[in-house]
Image (tube, rainbow, N blue to C red; front, side, top):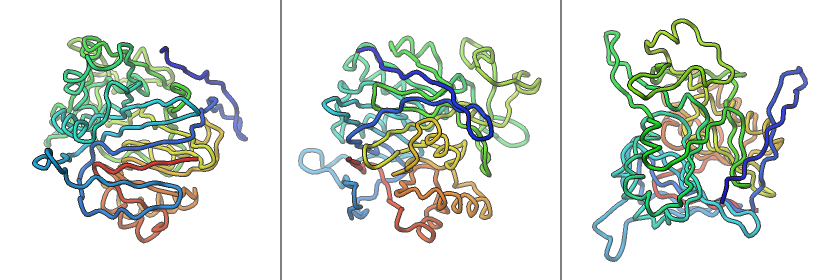
Length: 362
């Protein structure tokens, strides 16, 4: 089945600024399964939240009692959305290692042959490290016309981690040649995009508020050794001489995107994965491009672990003003965010762990 992609139109806000808009699909049901996160808590509360069914994966039983879910620094989510008689399934991000990802997919009983498409939030290794090993093991069982949705060319850049004294260590690269060898077709879009009449992406997220990209990796713009990102393929970015020098620059995640669903009668579910562009910016962008105002849930990594106290306090104040009904912090959100959420928005906070499964229904 060919992918159903909604056309993007452009509107203008009250200040005359252009805002891309799409006809965001509406689903009747969304199931979000945490395939891989930083911890597996077998004692985590199974308490229910009105309007959301919460299921926790405890220890394995029967013949599998000697195996357990693996957790690591990374994130992977299985998403199943139903609209009328149609159901679509996606795997969003792939954790740090294929060993942990493949182990958990097996134990959770996820039908990989039924996956309709793959989505990558951005080009960090803790979100893409398991991808090629996952494909090596499972590609032949999956649909032939397998697509990988990405926010833009930025996902293919070489990335580097500071190693001290001005030196850098290799932090990985997503190689187009490896995807081609695995018969996976990348679909890049800096504009918002509707996928299969079920999901939609925000496209590039403007940095319009108080949030900034907190320190993380460095990025290298350019192509070498057959891999990397091509500055000529970016849509609306004017590169500086420093950025074009081939030397690592602070990573701004120019085209990291959020994956979203509009659940009928509930509102938007916005999944930030890492949220380097800012969780407030991500939510506002999802509302702008979809035209839906109500945000039912914000989920994923919020990248607030390295946030200074004053910065976190400002983000929390903005989050409270957005009136998001449910908040599901994962991955890089940080113990500091969890403590602040318990104090500031306890009624909205839903704890997550590897194996947790959340169902949103109209």
